[in-house]
Length: 81
Image 1 (tube, rainbow, N blue to C red):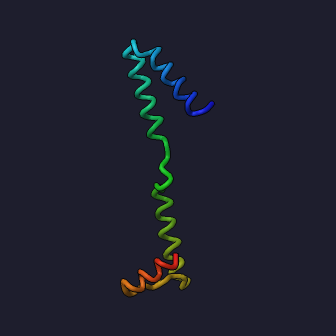
Image 2: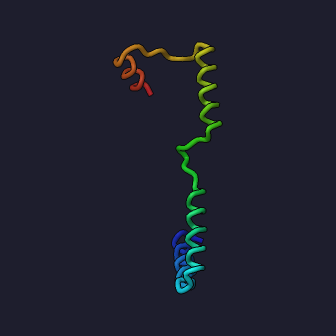
Image 3: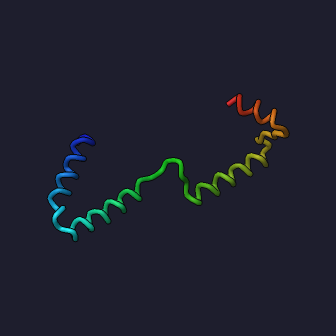
């Protein structure tokens, strides 16, 4: 099913239950829970964050870090990315 067909199906179902406030409230509650489950790809779990910190500290320990001591050095480094 395409997104357009799914939207039509959802609106048709909502029109069917629009007269029943109890059913409409249940549908709204479910849709809110469903929308909350949609993942934001920019977010990470607490565990993922601290794993990244640990990996960064390990890289520093292995001498794989870049030391930047001035604004100009930061600007130059950023331009290489």
